[in-house]
Amino acid sequence: MTEFLVAACLVIGTLFMLLAALGALRMPDLLMRMHATTKAGALGSGLIMLAVALHYGQSDVTARAIAIVIFIMLTAPVAAHVLARAGYFVGVPLWHRILADELKDKYDPTTHKLTGEPKEDDAER
Image (tube, rainbow, N blue to C red; front, side):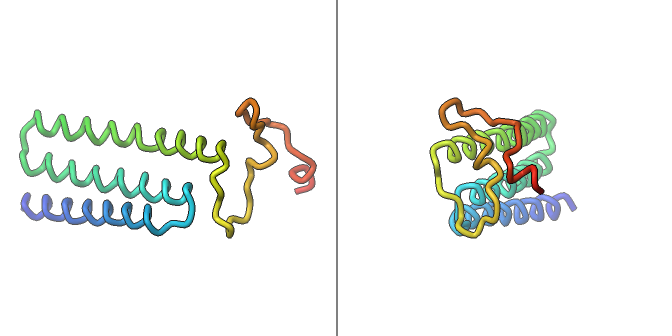
């Protein structure tokens, strides 16, 4: 039974990692690529670490696998946010079919800070 769970976690985790790689290749802009790789990559690596913990069944290996999963779950979203923010600041172009850029008039490029006050367009909505 354990071998079946290990194999299922490995296959599903590998498929999520494949989806993350395909998302990095196929998505049209930086923000969508990062979304695909962060979500699917973290889930895929978590499932692979779960398979490792189940396969070995030792407390030290399980503790390391849990530590790896926690580290990935804590750092991947933060790293994606920092990279997305940096990409937006330097002017990486967004996909042409994006309907709204909500930061466009709220970002000061000299101070790199967001203003909290709505513009005239926002007050009319």
